[in-house]
Image (cartoon, rainbow, N blue to C red; front, top):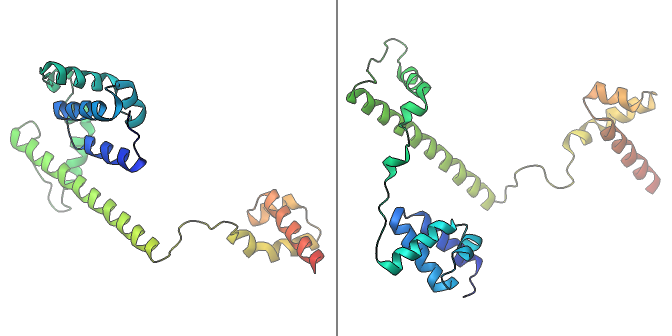
Length: 201
Protein backbone atom coordinates (compact mmCIF):
# COMPACT_ATOMS: atom_id res chain seq x y z
CA UNK A 1 0.00 0.00 0.00
CA UNK A 2 1.36 3.40 -1.04
CA UNK A 3 1.01 6.28 1.41
CA UNK A 4 -1.12 9.12 0.04
CA UNK A 5 -1.20 12.72 1.24
CA UNK A 6 -4.47 14.48 1.97
CA UNK A 7 -4.00 16.52 -1.21
CA UNK A 8 -3.65 13.38 -3.33
CA UNK A 9 -6.71 11.81 -1.70
CA UNK A 10 -8.79 14.92 -2.36
CA UNK A 11 -7.66 15.06 -5.99
CA UNK A 12 -8.51 11.40 -6.56
CA UNK A 13 -11.94 11.78 -4.94
CA UNK A 14 -12.70 14.86 -7.06
CA UNK A 15 -11.66 13.03 -10.21
CA UNK A 16 -13.93 10.09 -9.38
CA UNK A 17 -16.90 12.42 -8.88
CA UNK A 18 -16.53 13.65 -12.45
CA UNK A 19 -17.07 10.13 -13.79
CA UNK A 20 -20.19 7.96 -13.86
CA UNK A 21 -21.15 4.34 -14.26
CA UNK A 22 -18.56 1.92 -15.65
CA UNK A 23 -15.94 4.65 -16.14
CA UNK A 24 -16.09 5.58 -12.47
CA UNK A 25 -15.84 1.91 -11.41
CA UNK A 26 -12.85 1.42 -13.72
CA UNK A 27 -11.14 4.50 -12.25
CA UNK A 28 -11.85 3.43 -8.66
CA UNK A 29 -10.62 -0.08 -9.40
CA UNK A 30 -7.41 1.18 -11.02
CA UNK A 31 -6.71 3.47 -8.06
CA UNK A 32 -7.26 0.51 -5.72
CA UNK A 33 -4.81 -1.58 -7.72
CA UNK A 34 -2.16 1.14 -7.98
CA UNK A 35 -2.28 2.40 -4.39
CA UNK A 36 -4.21 -0.03 -2.18
CA UNK A 37 -3.12 -3.52 -3.28
CA UNK A 38 -6.58 -4.09 -4.81
CA UNK A 39 -8.25 -3.85 -1.39
CA UNK A 40 -11.83 -2.63 -1.76
CA UNK A 41 -12.26 -2.12 1.98
CA UNK A 42 -9.29 0.26 2.03
CA UNK A 43 -10.83 2.26 -0.82
CA UNK A 44 -13.99 2.57 1.26
CA UNK A 45 -12.07 3.70 4.34
CA UNK A 46 -9.72 6.15 2.61
CA UNK A 47 -11.85 7.56 -0.22
CA UNK A 48 -15.36 6.90 1.08
CA UNK A 49 -16.25 4.76 -1.95
CA UNK A 50 -18.70 1.88 -1.67
CA UNK A 51 -16.62 -1.29 -1.34
CA UNK A 52 -19.12 -3.33 -3.39
CA UNK A 53 -18.82 -0.88 -6.26
CA UNK A 54 -15.03 -1.00 -6.07
CA UNK A 55 -15.11 -4.80 -5.97
CA UNK A 56 -17.35 -4.83 -9.04
CA UNK A 57 -14.90 -2.54 -10.84
CA UNK A 58 -12.00 -4.82 -9.92
CA UNK A 59 -13.88 -7.85 -11.29
CA UNK A 60 -14.67 -5.94 -14.47
CA UNK A 61 -10.98 -5.11 -14.96
CA UNK A 62 -9.89 -8.70 -14.32
CA UNK A 63 -12.51 -10.32 -16.53
CA UNK A 64 -12.79 -7.66 -19.20
CA UNK A 65 -16.57 -7.90 -18.93
CA UNK A 66 -18.27 -4.59 -18.14
CA UNK A 67 -21.70 -4.54 -16.55
CA UNK A 68 -24.28 -2.33 -18.25
CA UNK A 69 -26.02 0.13 -15.95
CA UNK A 70 -29.78 -0.09 -16.43
CA UNK A 71 -30.89 3.03 -14.63
CA UNK A 72 -34.44 2.83 -15.93
CA UNK A 73 -34.91 -0.53 -14.24
CA UNK A 74 -34.20 1.02 -10.85
CA UNK A 75 -37.67 2.49 -10.75
CA UNK A 76 -36.63 6.12 -10.53
CA UNK A 77 -39.80 8.12 -11.09
CA UNK A 78 -40.09 11.28 -13.15
CA UNK A 79 -39.76 14.57 -11.35
CA UNK A 80 -43.39 15.48 -11.93
CA UNK A 81 -44.45 12.17 -10.39
CA UNK A 82 -42.27 12.60 -7.30
CA UNK A 83 -43.16 16.26 -6.80
CA UNK A 84 -46.62 16.94 -8.24
CA UNK A 85 -46.76 20.30 -6.48
CA UNK A 86 -43.78 21.39 -8.57
CA UNK A 87 -46.01 21.65 -11.65
CA UNK A 88 -48.36 24.04 -9.88
CA UNK A 89 -45.47 26.08 -8.46
CA UNK A 90 -43.82 26.46 -11.84
CA UNK A 91 -47.03 27.64 -13.44
CA UNK A 92 -47.63 30.13 -10.62
CA UNK A 93 -44.09 31.50 -10.89
CA UNK A 94 -44.42 31.89 -14.64
CA UNK A 95 -47.80 33.61 -14.45
CA UNK A 96 -47.60 37.30 -15.35
CA UNK A 97 -49.65 39.67 -13.23
CA UNK A 98 -51.83 40.72 -16.16
CA UNK A 99 -52.10 37.51 -18.12
CA UNK A 100 -51.97 33.85 -17.07
CA UNK A 101 -49.43 31.75 -18.92
CA UNK A 102 -51.22 28.81 -20.50
CA UNK A 103 -49.55 25.50 -21.28
CA UNK A 104 -50.61 21.94 -20.74
CA UNK A 105 -48.19 19.84 -18.71
CA UNK A 106 -49.81 16.70 -20.08
CA UNK A 107 -48.37 17.48 -23.55
CA UNK A 108 -44.74 17.12 -24.67
CA UNK A 109 -44.60 20.86 -25.38
CA UNK A 110 -45.85 21.70 -21.91
CA UNK A 111 -43.35 19.34 -20.29
CA UNK A 112 -40.56 20.93 -22.32
CA UNK A 113 -41.51 24.42 -21.17
CA UNK A 114 -41.74 23.29 -17.55
CA UNK A 115 -38.35 21.56 -17.79
CA UNK A 116 -36.72 24.62 -19.34
CA UNK A 117 -38.17 26.90 -16.69
CA UNK A 118 -37.07 24.61 -13.88
CA UNK A 119 -33.58 24.42 -15.40
CA UNK A 120 -33.36 28.21 -15.66
CA UNK A 121 -34.47 28.59 -12.06
CA UNK A 122 -31.82 26.12 -10.89
CA UNK A 123 -29.21 27.87 -13.03
CA UNK A 124 -30.09 31.23 -11.49
CA UNK A 125 -29.89 29.75 -7.99
CA UNK A 126 -26.44 28.27 -8.72
CA UNK A 127 -25.23 31.61 -10.08
CA UNK A 128 -26.45 33.37 -6.94
CA UNK A 129 -24.72 30.82 -4.72
CA UNK A 130 -21.50 31.23 -6.70
CA UNK A 131 -21.69 35.03 -6.40
CA UNK A 132 -22.12 34.76 -2.64
CA UNK A 133 -19.15 32.41 -2.34
CA UNK A 134 -16.99 34.69 -4.49
CA UNK A 135 -18.01 37.71 -2.43
CA UNK A 136 -17.19 35.97 0.84
CA UNK A 137 -13.84 34.81 -0.53
CA UNK A 138 -12.96 38.30 -1.73
CA UNK A 139 -13.99 39.83 1.59
CA UNK A 140 -11.85 37.35 3.53
CA UNK A 141 -8.91 38.18 1.25
CA UNK A 142 -9.36 41.83 2.25
CA UNK A 143 -9.19 40.85 5.91
CA UNK A 144 -12.90 40.95 6.71
CA UNK A 145 -13.77 38.65 9.62
CA UNK A 146 -17.23 37.09 9.62
CA UNK A 147 -19.17 36.23 12.74
CA UNK A 148 -18.53 37.28 16.29
CA UNK A 149 -14.89 37.47 17.21
CA UNK A 150 -13.50 35.56 20.16
CA UNK A 151 -14.16 37.43 23.38
CA UNK A 152 -16.44 39.97 21.72
CA UNK A 153 -19.57 40.84 23.74
CA UNK A 154 -21.42 43.43 21.68
CA UNK A 155 -24.80 43.29 23.39
CA UNK A 156 -23.65 42.81 26.97
CA UNK A 157 -20.97 45.53 26.69
CA UNK A 158 -23.53 47.93 25.26
CA UNK A 159 -26.02 47.26 28.05
CA UNK A 160 -23.44 47.09 30.86
CA UNK A 161 -24.05 50.68 32.10
CA UNK A 162 -27.80 50.05 32.34
CA UNK A 163 -27.25 46.73 34.12
CA UNK A 164 -24.93 48.32 36.69
CA UNK A 165 -27.35 51.20 37.24
CA UNK A 166 -30.23 48.79 37.89
CA UNK A 167 -28.05 46.71 40.23
CA UNK A 168 -27.19 49.85 42.15
CA UNK A 169 -30.93 50.59 42.31
CA UNK A 170 -31.43 47.29 44.13
CA UNK A 171 -33.08 45.21 41.41
CA UNK A 172 -32.39 41.48 41.25
CA UNK A 173 -30.40 39.89 38.44
CA UNK A 174 -33.50 38.07 37.22
CA UNK A 175 -35.54 41.28 37.05
CA UNK A 176 -32.76 43.08 35.20
CA UNK A 177 -32.47 40.20 32.73
CA UNK A 178 -36.18 40.29 31.96
CA UNK A 179 -36.17 44.05 31.57
CA UNK A 180 -33.17 44.17 29.24
CA UNK A 181 -33.73 40.82 27.49
CA UNK A 182 -30.61 39.26 28.97
CA UNK A 183 -30.07 36.00 30.74
CA UNK A 184 -29.45 35.98 34.48
CA UNK A 185 -25.95 34.58 33.86
CA UNK A 186 -25.13 37.44 31.45
CA UNK A 187 -26.15 39.99 34.07
CA UNK A 188 -24.01 38.16 36.63
CA UNK A 189 -21.00 38.17 34.27
CA UNK A 190 -21.37 41.93 33.69
CA UNK A 191 -21.38 42.56 37.45
CA UNK A 192 -18.38 40.25 37.95
CA UNK A 193 -16.36 42.03 35.26
CA UNK A 194 -17.19 45.42 36.79
CA UNK A 195 -16.20 44.29 40.28
CA UNK A 196 -13.00 42.77 38.94
CA UNK A 197 -12.08 45.98 37.11
CA UNK A 198 -12.80 48.05 40.24
CA UNK A 199 -10.72 45.68 42.37
CA UNK A 200 -7.78 45.84 39.98
CA UNK A 201 -7.85 49.65 40.09
